[in-house]
Image (cartoon, rainbow, N blue to C red; front, side):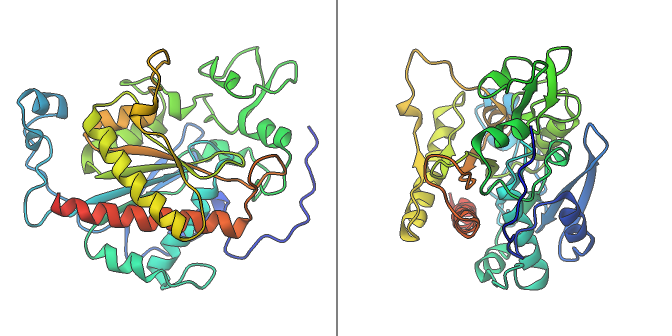
Length: 348
């Protein structure tokens, strides 16, 4: 497929490349950085702000629940406890709108302003109360296959080519066809889309509870060690309204927490003129298979909600096409709601 020549000006704040992440991380002084590697040997950064909680852990979550007390896994009742928010960008390599926002948030924390000159004072206020963990690019392998800085203005077909790839006959794998082969390797595969790491693993549908991808293992180690009160995985949803997807194959207690966060975000979005889609667990139909993906698995691994946020991507396609400014704005609203929700967990 021929690449479309992108002639539009990219806003100065729109930092979407792996090198942008490298440059940002080099200047981090207020947080701590752990560095990991992807299947293809590329850098994955985990940035931590705050003070790590010391849980008086005597059991894993399963055993603690069996003992009728989650505190044996993670006691969050101490006066020194700091609620934790985990934000994860770019699990699918051509869905990096959230990564743009995350790099700006890191820049604001470190320098006082994002790349657009906005101070985001609310972040500084909440960082006195909570821990914040940011993984800007969880799938740098996939991101490396995308030759664009933005999906804005691309055709649907070209986006699908780079995001999900092709079969060996050149036809688009499309959605959900891109999930019928896992890992995406072998004679059937043509161009390996950005959905996958270099081993052909779609991290969202790795093997649970025994993940084969290094990227997946990093996420499970993070939620096990830090037990975040809220985890948000940032994805792109073509030209849809922004959406929060709840973890399906989980206890209703966890789904209810997801809905509480979603309602808070819906209210904040509405006040800024955005519509947020959310379907509760009660909306699912009995004859449909529960979507047991990484969000459900991570929720069950730590006993706290992990949700997916699907962003608008501004394609030249049907639906509601948002501008890059609007896409960035919807992420900032999401982060505001996430910080508010997480801080309130201290008193739950």
